[in-house]
Length: 339
Image 1 (tube, one colour):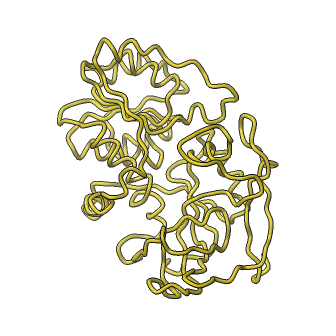
Image 2 (image 1 turned 45 degrees about the vertical axis):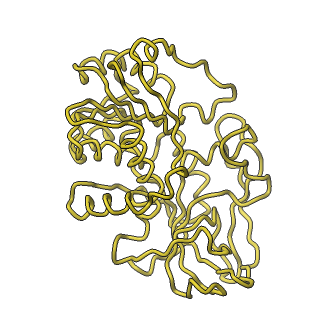
C-alpha cells in the first residue's frame, strides 16, 4: 500500500446467504486530515465479530445497516497520529470504532485511551473489551448463576463463550461447552477447565446433553440459537435462565428458520432474555476491575486468532461465520509498537 494512501474495505453489495468476496471492495483513498476537535488514528488491530453479518443486511435490526459503498463497521485499536482534540495526543493508544480501514478520523466521543502496560493492546477487542463485557454481564446479570448449578455454553471456544464459561467456573458452577470440533472441545476442557464439551458436528446433542448434564440445565448461555437451543430446552430445569447473546446459526439464512418448540419454557417457568452489551456501558469499570484481576491471578485464560493484513479481512470474516476461527478473531492491520 502507498504510504500516503488509506486502505479501506467497503460494503460492495448485500449478501444473499453466506457473504462472498465480491460483497466487499478494497479501495485506496488519500489519508484524511483531522479537522477541529478531531483525531487521525492509525489502525493497529481490527476486530471481526459475528454481529457484522447483520449490519451487512438491510433487514430491520437493533442497529442501522451499513450503507452500500461505505466502510465496513468494526471495533479498532489504534494509535493517534495527529490530534486537534484536547483530550488526545499524538502517540496515544485508543480503542475506537473506525471500521475496516487503515486510518480513521474520530471526534473522540467513542475513543477510550489504552495503557499497554495493563494488558496487550489487542485484548481491548476481546477479553477486556466488548466480547468479554458481553460474557460478564450476560452471564451474571441475565443468567444469575448460583454455585452448584449447571451452565451450558454454545460456541464455547469463541471470544464470548470461552470467557463466559470461565467466569461460570470462577462462580462455582458445573460448565459444559458446545463447540464445532474435537480440537476446540479439548481446548475448553483441558486448557480452560470446562467440566465437559460436546462436539455438535459429531455427537447427538440430546443424548450428549443428558450424559453431561445429569442434573439438568440451569443456565444456557446462547451464542447460536438453532438446533443447540432446541436440544437444550428439553433438558432445562425449573426456573432456568437463558441469556440470548447471539444467533450465529441464522446470520446467513436467506429465510428465517422456524423456531424451536418453546413449550418447555412455559412448563419450567424459564426465562429467556435478549442481551445487548451496549445497555451496560455505564457499568464498564465494574467489568474491567473483575476481569483484570482474574487475568492477573491466572483464573482467566484467553486465546486470539490473528490474521495479518487488512485485505484478508473479508476471507477471515467469512470463515468466522462458518466457525473456522479458533479464539477471538482479529486482523493486525499495521505494526504494534508495544510488541
